[in-house]
Length: 197
Image (cartoon, rainbow, N blue to C red):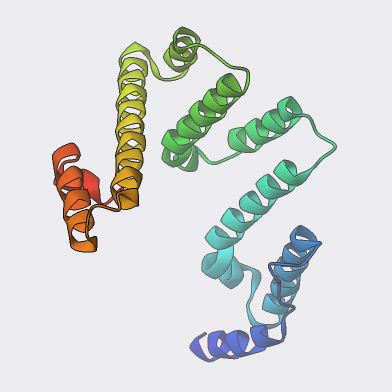
């Protein structure tokens, strides 16, 4: 099998490539997968192919199906969600268990984005989150929102004060730099300063 494997790897060099700027990228990916599977049949038995590539094939087919659903402009958001849910339902139990946290996060992010797009209030956002992740996690996320908003306020104030310092013609360049450094150290903890730009 090792000789066959190395011969197969060499033969894959002749397979079609997929370019990131290919207008029909999904179709090109699908064609590449099919060409590789056809090529495998020349080098491996069905059992060998399943043992060597079965897991990767499953993952690739699932990912491509999801990409095709998301790229389908003929489907509404609800139809896409239904088709993605159907794919989820057909996953093996161990894969569903492994993907469950990410699926929950994806659902939460989608619901948050939809709520923000329609101008949801803080209470509405809390209700959306509570429904999806429970009351405690929803409260923690609301607190994180407040922390992020406060940090953003501090960053904006820092930028405004920094601009004032830079515009102050009475200060020399070293004095400006020292003033900005002092401002940064007063307003932000060391672990926050790398977030400033």
